[in-house]
Length: 438
Image 1 (cartoon, one colour):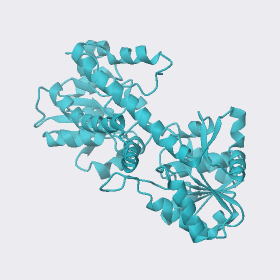
Image 2 (spheres, one colour; image 1 turned 90 degrees about the vertical axis):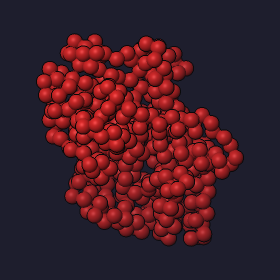
Image 3 (spheres, one colour; image 1 turned 180 degrees about the vertical axis):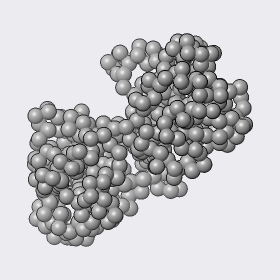
């Protein structure tokens, strides 16, 4: 199969490299000529474990290429994937579809022969209808089927998710389109991937419903964590106790500072706006979004309480800035409202993240960036664990205590056991568990 991937962001680059690894001929297209030039040099613009090796292998095998001109790749393609950004539109929270529609117009002008145009970007229900209208209006002679194929990749585990998916959802009712998409994903059949064909609007809805449900699970356990702290229960044991019920499941029941990233905040907002357009109330999703936004800022108050209620003149060390481990993604990261809240309360903030500091500097310019966890903790009145990078899971507690001004740790990811922190002489605050006084 010949595949054109429009967009070399997170979804486009991972998907393109994985399709090439399946044996397809893939050309990734991006308007940013500097990014294309960097990719030709082997420089990967995002951090994703294993992606640099995967790209290099398939470029060397001549199955993967990059260009800023979509005309030839689209003309040659059996399938063209639209994988451009759909950020929240400023002012109203709707998904900004301007990049999707612009891509559709450009694609239409270069189509040759039967082609399946696939929306891989996360788009509101009905976007496929508009993409099809744009293509047919721009090129009435085009022999085209427009399908939806939402992605379900977890940052930090995207390559494995792509190659061993829970399901592959394809939204098309056209038999020719089903055949092409079946051929695109045929290499997965050895892995017994469930290929699920639906109507196009149903596929678009599945993506938003899935993300909203996962965001709801996170927010639910975060609220249970708050109650657990008040009544003296341990939220980690609560989560395990309910997660062992296979109707509930254990995943996404990890209490923390709130969800962030490129998907959950944006997609919950967009789903609420879609519902409002159709005069439907999504009260649960609305509550999830409101609780999550309030929670991220409240984490700064939790740090303040651990230091007696005042941060004026205090130095706070923050470990982890990205929204989750194994990515450099700072989009809607909980660290941003936390750090700005600490600064607003009068604190001086130092921070360390294994891969995300360059990206963080644009969001958080008024803090000191450190070279490792121990230099970050030096002279700090409190240390806050925000992202559960593996590098932070086995810190030398004695060394840490010796370098800090006060032995106070606020663990927003429940990385450590309270009894271990007590034995090491720390005052220790975590999420949904009783505090420890050192």
